[in-house]
Image (cartoon, rainbow, N blue to C red; front, side):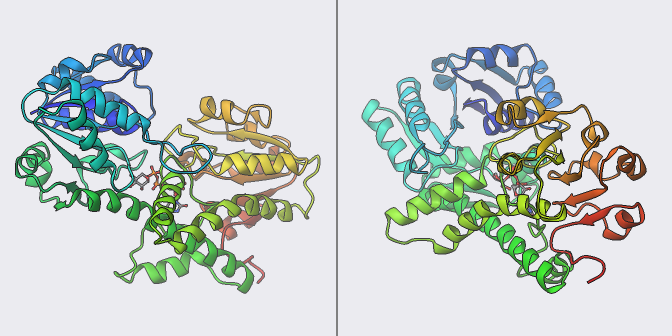
Amino acid sequence: MRVAMIGTGYVGLVSGACFADFGHTVTCVDKDARKIEALQAGHIPIFEPGLDRLVETNVREKRLDFTTELTGPVGEADAVFIAVGTPSRRGDGHADLSYVYNSAREIAAAVSGFTVVVTKSTVPVGTGDEVERIIRETRPDADVAVVSNPEFLREGAAIRDFKHPDRIVIGTTDERARQVMTDLYRPLYLNQAPLLFTQRGTAELIKYAANAFLATKITFINELADLCEKVGGDVQEVARGIGLDNRIGAKFLHAGPGYGGSCFPKDTLALIKTAQDHEAPLRIVETVVAVNDQRKRAMARKVASALGGNVRDKTIAVLGLTFKPNTDDMRDAPSIPLVTAFNDMGAKVRAYDPAGMEQAKRDLDGLVTFCGNAYECAEGADALVIVTEWEQFRALDLHRLRSVMNRPVVVDLRNIYRADEMERAGFTYSGIGRAPAEA
Ligand code: UDX
C-alpha cells in the first residue's frame, strides 16, 4: 500500500514510521521546510524512545521519505492520512480545525484514482462530514472515501501503543475503504488486535470519550487522595483495592499533581464545547476540567504548608518539568502553574528535567534557575518537590541529597518514595494522599 501522511508532528511521524515498518511505502509531508530538511538529514524533532531507529531503518530500506510537496505523494497514495494539529482555539476552547480543512482542500486537488482520506487528528464529531464536503466541493469528480481513524498513542510509549493497540477504531461504512484500512493494519489484525468498525461520527466521539474518561479517572483518584490526607487513608491502597475490580481496572489511578499534556486538557475542553453546542452538556467532564485546573495551585499551597505556610524568600527545588516522563513535551505541564504559583508566593525556584529543559526555558523564562542535575538543583533548597516521575529520580542518593539541601523537606507529588525510607534518611516527607506517619 502507498500512504501519504500529512503532518509530521507527533502523531504523523510515529504513525508514518510504524506503517512503513509494516511494509507499506510512506511519504510524510509537511509545510515546514526546516522540519523536512532535518528529517531528511536523519534528525528527529521530537523525543520519543525508539523513533530515531525506526525512522532510520525504514528510510534506509526506502519505505519512508519526507517532502514538502503534497501533490505527488497524494496522487500516488491508496490512503492519505490527515495528522495535522487541532489546537484549542484561543478564546473559546473549541478545536481549531483550520489546518485540517486546509489539508482537505489540498488533498482534494491532488488525489487520483480511488483514495481513502483518513482523519487521524483528534477532531470533533462532524469534522469528517465537513472534510468530505470540502473535497467534493473542490473536486466533484474525486473518487474518495473519508474515514475517521483516531489514535490512542501515549507520548513516551507511542511505538509500542501503535504496534500493540488495545483496539483500532475505524469509522466508515464504505466497503472499499474498509478493505484498504484492513490491509493497512494487516499485521495488527493478524495479531488479533480488534478492529472496531463504526459510523464515522461515532469513531470521532470514541476518541474524545476515551480521553475524557481517562481524565475523569485521574481526577477522581486525585480528589480521593485529598480525602485520604484529611481522614488518614492511603490513596495507593485505595487505588489498588478498587483497581482489582475488573469493572474499574487498575490503570490511570495514580494520584498526582493533576493531568497535563497535549491531549487531555485540549480534548476535554473541546468535548465540553461540542456537548454544550448540542445542548447535551457533559457536566461530569466540566467538573473534571475545573477540579484539575484548581489542583495545580492547590499543590503549590501543599508545598507551602510543608514549609510552615510561608515560602517568601525560600528556595524550592523542582525535579521534573515535563507533563510526564520520557518526553520533552511541556504542553500544559502541571509544572508551569506550579512554578508560577511559587513565584507569586515570593519563593525562588530551581529546577531540573532530564529532557525538557530546552522547552521549559521557553515556558518558564525568568521564573526558574535551571540546573544540570538533581543534586545541583537541590543545593541550598528549603524544599525539594518531585513533579515528574522520571526513572532517574526514583533512586536518588538520599544522603547526598540531604547534605546539599538547606532544609531536609521533600514533597513527592508522584508518590515515588516511601515515607519510612525518607524519614529514616532524615527527611520531613509528604506524598500525595498518604497520611503522615504519626497519624
Ligand atoms: C493521552 C492518552 O493516554 C492517549 O491515549 C491519547 O491518544 C493522547 O493522550 P499522553 O497525553 O501522551 O496520552 O499521556 P498519558 O500517559 O495518558 O498521561 C496524561 C497525563 O495524565 C499526564 O500528565 C500524566 O502524568 C497524568 N496521569 C496519568 C496521572 O496523573 N495519573 C495516572 O494514573 C495516569
